[in-house]
Length: 246
Image (cartoon, rainbow, N blue to C red; front, side, top):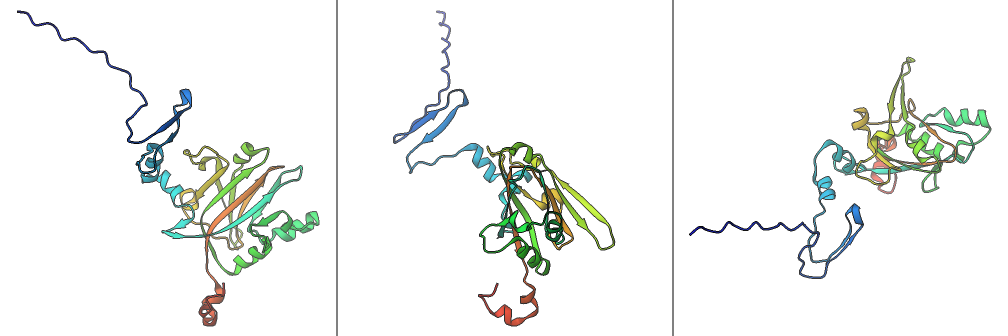
């Protein structure tokens, strides 16, 4: 007797449902896929995109994971706030010891009114003259942009000018738009590592300055992650013994 042919079963379409011991809520955003998953606290969840970024050891992911750190050591943070509320663009020469006097002669105004230091206890010129005597090592930095021309401000490059006493000048351009993390939604926060962009750290000593144009109406906040050496503690043992002396 001839055997009947096997019946082909119709495969069911895959769904977004899964079994759970306790109540689980899934909120969908239509064609964009799942927007929110709410599960009990005792259930383990793996989010593929985020976990791949955290566990990945590629050059792109390493650059953002070490922001604020250098060789595993947490760095201090120096934050400058630039609010250009004037109708014209403002070209800033950060860490240039000549700029406060040049700005005073050209505008009869104080540069400290344009550049604010987070915390409000010290002025920009205080920080500038302090780092000329006490070397500062800056491995990485973060830029936060706000204002009506945020997109145009992101396209403005940095120019890191390294001057020498023999009259030689070397300029290294740095395009901030290329440093935006492709895993972040908001491109107004830009973090980068000087080693990855210039193949060297940034050490402002009065001859190495950062030129940056701030467009009219925009506010730019720059956070430098740094390590500083104190000259007074290097030469005077009495200063090293005082733990409460910075």
